[in-house]
Amino acid sequence: MSNETTIRKRWISLYVENQVGVLSKISGLFSGKSYNLDSLTVGTTEDPSVSRMTIATVSDDETFEQIKKQLNRMVEVIKVIDFTDIFVRMKEILYVKVKKCTKEDKVSLFQIADTFKARVIDYGKDSLLLEFVQTGAKNDAVIKLMKEEYKTIEVVRGGSVGIESISVMER
Image 1 (tube, rainbow, N blue to C red):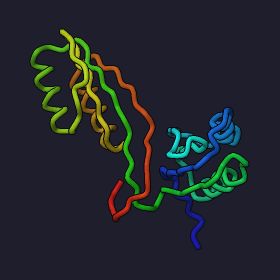
Image 2: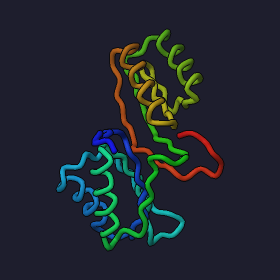
Image 3: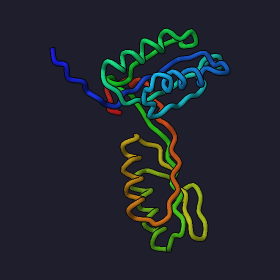
């Protein structure tokens, strides 16, 4: 057996009790153990007493196993699901505001929106606001493109949310 450690992005979905302080406790576990918390998204489920968290972290196998064990030990955690190697539907929201636009910039931005299946959700004399709901990797590509093409942009990005696929699909 190899002693090689593979550091890679990993995903966990947690069902937790919807109580004050649970989010703080879970994020505190990550900071207290110096685990890298890449993204954390939380929202209530169909049961208002239960929330579901989607957590992204970058770690090696051993550290990731420790994270899962420690989360499983927490009283408020109902269930831990490792999304890393299973088929999951996963998306995140991204807003990009482009300021100081020329008319040519706006035409180009509408083409970008069309290409990436984004929506133009706000429009001003010299600015445009785009909304993207796609994978994190696609949003990375959009941000890179926007930084290269436009002088003044503002980016707001939500964490990913995911659910197990019904059929075998990619992220």
